[in-house]
Image (cartoon, rainbow, N blue to C red; front, side, top):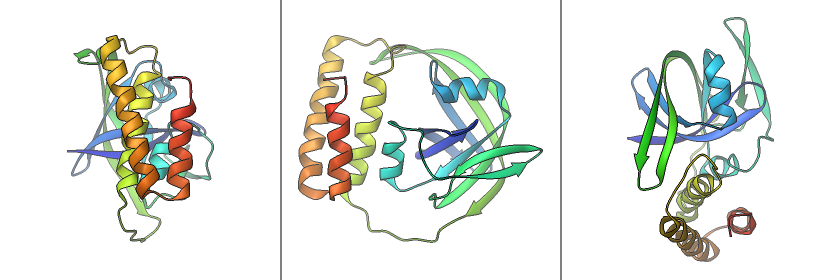
Length: 192
């Protein structure tokens, strides 16, 4: 199962990433060309931040946030202060592959890390809103459409844009002002 989190790496860099989490192991797939990809080529640690879905979606658009820092193994690791929980992972393995799927061909780095520290920051229970999941989907689509390293067929690109429009209509019906404002930002950016 893939869990959506915000990965922090380097100094003030965050990215929404789907992770595979099994016991003490985290596996992430990073597309070539991202800051996180570049950071984890060199860094031995990263932080998986368990966040509200709006925070995950916003991470596609900006690195600005309220960061905290932990000193771990002599390194300052950034994390998001508004996360529910954080996992610090030590990189054990990197594998480089070329992935071919319906989005085209892309170069990936598969990073395997072991959780070496975890901390609960907030014990908050919030009811789920349909707009939460749709915003995360919009963020995923947006990131694929705006990654120059991902080559895809025009028909797939158009289908993804239609999905964005469909999700936006639903978010306007069921989401809060914050949901709608973020969805508008996705819709107004350069992919349309």
